[in-house]
Image (cartoon, rainbow, N blue to C red; front, side, top):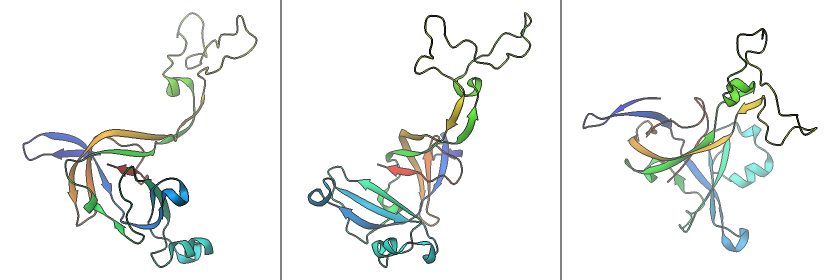
Length: 192
């Protein structure tokens, strides 16, 4: 993240995103598939890493490392072979960004759920960050949904109502207001 200074002197917290140009590899129709969507391939990888079926599917469009499908709600799907670039976005557009959050591995209840832990006094020596009782009084089981230690992060998250502050077509870079999910290098999906 960084700061973006608008022309009027206003400062925005912003995230800089590099946009990879994509190619439409397949168009799904209502008659054949039951819905309208465009399958877009992007990124490069070695040809020998592709399977024969992927090579046949991509034809001569390229050796794509990533393939994603975009639903077209009421809009007309582009033709096979059309490129998807920064030209489809404008400064000031309101977008939503989806991606995987940072994965933090197995974490305890203090970090994962914000528990306070036990008191530091009255003879409690080793219970600073423990969960405490899990409510075993009446029942002989653990209730469903009990918050405990476990794997944290790595979830798909969508952030809505973000604004495009600036577009640099020479370097294929977009500046988006606010924070987006994931670490540096995370693959994200931007929809209008």
